[in-house]
Length: 219
Image (cartoon, rainbow, N blue to C red; front, side):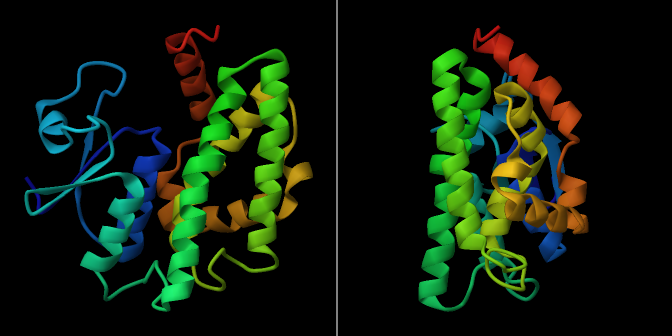
């Protein structure tokens, strides 16, 4: 086993965060694909006995769980290249706030766009558009959420760019119409090798959403 191992699933935006952060830092690692829809490996169950889910970063035999915690760990464990979190305490706190917002609001509401139908889906769509506008307000005219440098909030949100097509197709709306600055930001992120190599093609994600719909009994 290499010194750094990532237990992951190809379509996981949370695992993709870790892949982006490791690439930005230039860290070599062993990628291990997990079957999250079937039997979980003994290594995953041993490494994450509480949640039993990916991603898990194993560094020198010690597991780190939960994607935002992993990204922060990567930033601190390899501090000499491409800092992701600001050094200033207030800016750091703000970055953590918006990264948490991505998990608690953006991802949660986004998943409802394909899990729900009818009036419930329409309500989720309106809520999601509001979330996009909040993110657009925070982004403003900056290149990235943290300013000129690609950082923690960008790593947190960038994997969901490949889910935009699924959100739009399932709920019948245009993210570019709702939040053009967020879409332009996503295109800038995709110009980075770390992001382009980590993200799945939107068509593949849409196929995966179809699998998930069947799993959750949506269709």
